[in-house]
Length: 189
Image 1 (cartoon, one colour):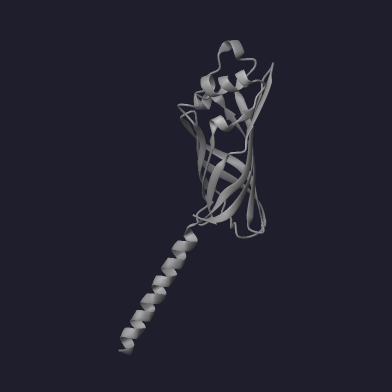
Image 2 (tube, helix red, strand yellow; image 1 turned 30 degrees about the horizontal axis):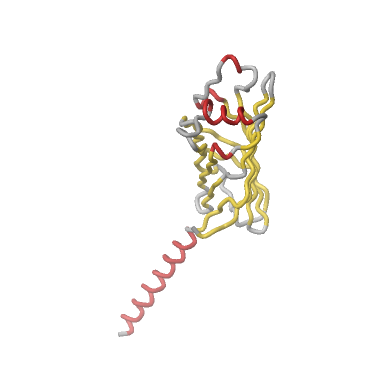
């Protein structure tokens, strides 16, 4: 009988370790606040728009990430008509409602340790239905269990099959500047 009790205890301990590991693996950093801006700085016009509706997750066990923003959530522009053209003619928001970026942080980092980390995020940037493999530099700052992201990069319109009519080519840049700031909290998902 003692051998049976020992076997049961060993099995119970093994089961508890597996369960605890599974529960810990379910914790991911999720965006709680965000601000994404884009700027088109063309010869004849400066256009800026922003969204505070970026969503995203980072899995701290393997540094994989996934982010997206609803294209229609961008506000700003120089006029209501400009926003309509952005959604209807250029981004085709009904057909391609989200811009997405998913992949893995290249550098090994431990998000449980406070500090500032310059990282490269490698993944697929999917805009306007066109996927491009990109490496985007970002700064992650961890403070008291909160992750802050700062990222600045450029998106060439040609890479995502976004065409600009010749008549407005001096008013829309061929490369769009993007800035992202986000705050992420560890959550059980």
